[in-house]
Amino acid sequence: MPSRNLSADEPCPVARSVDLVGDRWSMLIVRDAFDGISRFSDFQRSLGMARNILSDRLRKLVDAGILETRAASDGSAYQEYVLTARGESLFPVVVALRQWGERHLFAKGEAHSQLVDKRAGRPLARMAPQAGDGRVLRAADTEVRKLR
Amino acid sequence: MPSRNLSADEPCPVARSVDLVGDRWSMLIVRDAFDGISRFSDFQRSLGMARNILSDRLRKLVDAGILETRAASDGSAYQEYVLTARGESLFPVVVALRQWGERHLFAKGEAHSQLVDKRAGRPLARMAPQAGDGRVLRAADTEVRKLR
Image (cartoon, rainbow over all chains, first blue to last red; front, side):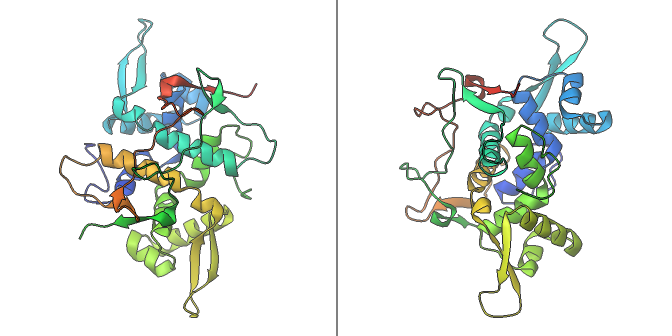
């Protein structure tokens, strides 16, 4: 469990998640980590962030168990930031954000980067919430059972 | 297209999405809207936000085409905020955030609210990115093709 969680007493899993990854920079750092970026200077180049903000967000992601540090793979003195298993399991969140953006935030014909299945070289299927038996569910087909 | 998009020239759909919904409050407002909350005072009660911040975030979500306003359904003078079709299609993002939180941010046996399929009364299947042919994909099975 993360040591500093604003909503540790919050019974909603969405709220706990957004407390950890619900800010622009954290999510873009996670996206870059999925893309194979691991060094401070490479995150900085990719994101154009101030060093102190990048430092702060990396530390928070490490504290939250989403990233971990390790010695650089090339034997240099650099430190690398890599996704933990917990961080890797944010993949569906990143893909869902990507697919929503692709559908709604690009003009027709406007180019965007594509996430493809390496084997087939094709874009992924569109993610959709499903019932246990595979029925695709819209929000109206579901309800939240709050704790009493 | 949103009129004010920090990353309108950003070819990454993840980046464009997080510019619109990548902050704690916006995502929790969207979550509450999925739960049927529609009035300013009800959002405020649910989220415990300062009025001016709630006002700002609601306006941004309306500007982004995620929420729209309408006259109150009970004929009163109140205004309601409801999800547009674009907003409704954030459902996979909210479910993915919820499922990540459920898996990683609660102690074993710790209770949390549950999202269930109304018909079966059961929790949803775990969302997973898939290839066009239905193979479940881990991040390592995919790659991002950037624009040249």
